[in-house]
Length: 194
Image: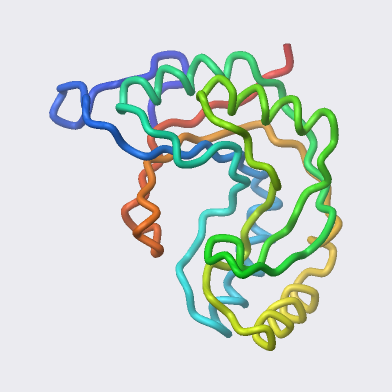
């Protein structure tokens, strides 16, 4: 991880990467919440398979930049964002692979403002439905019902939890790689009150 005060835009060979890549900005829950989320994720993977997921809330995704531009824009944006509260509104299932089983957040003014500001600085629209995916996959309707039961039996309190986001990460992503094994965390920033 790069030093928060001195972002490095060089690749491992020391030469700036001018090639365009896909990027995503993730808000990372506090460690105590990540631990609970990972326990639920493990139970779902044990039942249905699927890739291991880093707990995160997508702030901005599928942004096309060079490595240097992505890091610079991310670093500058982080200086303008304050910590913000996320309150889970509901547990939801979806037909979309990357949102198959998710915690969906209440869209408060604070959440919309901070996410919108960060996404805007990254030159993209903010996520229209802030969520934390618990499982990536393609499940039948019956399997989705079973997944909801598993989540509630492992940690029902997770379906109503509230927490403060204090750090965000920049990832180089490849959406064709559904395993996420090629996805690379490039930079992390801690948010601080202004």
